Amino acid sequence: MINRLLGYWRRWRDARQLEKHISPRVFVELSAELKELARTASKVRHNEPDFQARVTRIQKEMNQLGELASKPEFKRLSPAKRLELRKSLLLSKAQLLESMHNAEPPTTTLQ
Image 1: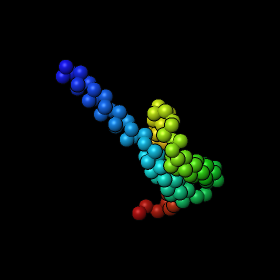
Image 2 (image 1 turned 180 degrees about the vertical axis):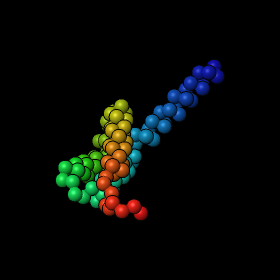
Image 3 (image 1 turned 90 degrees about the vertical axis):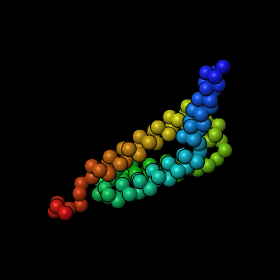
Image 4 (image 1 turned 120 degrees about the horizontal axis):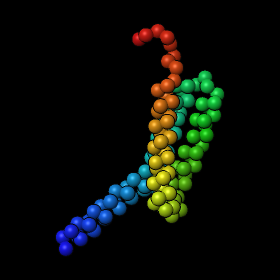
């Protein structure tokens, strides 16, 4: 009896945690963060046209995602799709950070 109650409680707790990770508010915040990160990355690597095109595309997509996540239709997406989208956004964030770390330093003089 107690094990069954503990099982229900764990499943309820896990469902609540999942909902926190895939709520529309999280996607609005993540898209805004990625937009800001892309803007910063474009300043760090300003002399690379391919990278600038990629940053522009990221900013457009994050604008669209922010608008979409603000609409009620976004909650109709399945939790699996929203979780997959969240993982993809976190991966994009890591890749942007990595590209910023790999940027050429602005000067060859050691500081």
